Image 1 (spheres, rainbow, N blue to C red):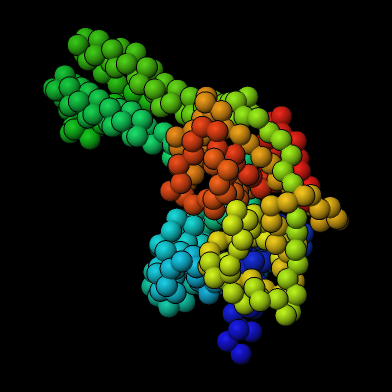
Image 2 (image 1 turned 135 degrees about the horizontal axis):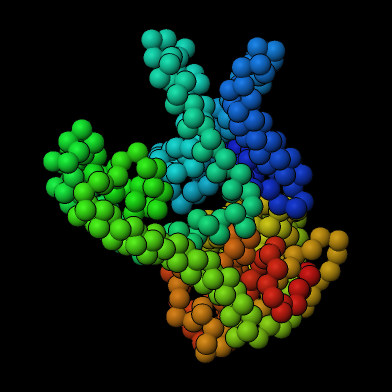
Length: 401
């Protein structure tokens, strides 16, 4: 009974995670989830129009209740299958890691403010304002499209530079506000009544917004304002330039990899596990593989699995081993990249590589020795890297098994 229950949990996890090309149930769930997010946001916008609310208010509320209910169900399913996402952790640790992750908090806030007034009616108005947080649910769509993650990757990669530039802007903002308060307080005590008034002026000036509600009237104040305006133009350009450089660096890495890497065909054989096979029911770490033979990819019900040591092999699993090519209707595309001296991957740990989530390093060959990759492994010149990818790599020949 436990094995059957775990099997169902694993299947639910496979469905709610990002779907593969062949898993139609998972792809349908992804589409339904993305559609629910967009519909919910559309309803929230339409409800702000008085004429639409008066005519279709009940319908909009019903649609909102339905979409929020789907968010709640999705959250509960992800809690239930959290250990499948982090099999190396205990159930409690896996649950804690998901709940306190960014997407876990977003998933929680997407439905919690809707149901809180049921238990705390006195705070209904405040909770209704918290429903605005639901817009962050749109980040869940971001998980389905790898191209949308480029922005996040750039910001994370340049976070130290961005933090430094923002810190400098904040320091200048505080300093200029205090200076302007000192220069204008006597001439305009009702406008620059305290330091906060100066901060509001400094923010609108340094960020080149210039609302015009607060401005200096003294000669020294105007001269200082001109100086801050010119300074603001340059300061705002700093984080903009950092992000722009991040985008350029992000896309140039893929190009450099294709320029400095030699790609050639990789030949593999595939074996299918039968009911009586000794490997069935064992983890990959427990099976006895011949020397220099490794499992590169596992195909299970049209899904491609990364062969981790804790993965339990099942009947009808298709294992891809190093040998000659095998072709049928199911396509597994692999690539072989020989790392040359100037390849940007040389000297980097695998977990630090800036590669698509749809690209998986399945095997490393070094000095004739085949190694199973892990996040801490450092790549060296002349390493042969075997990749599974659904993304296009420039100048790469696809290998179908």
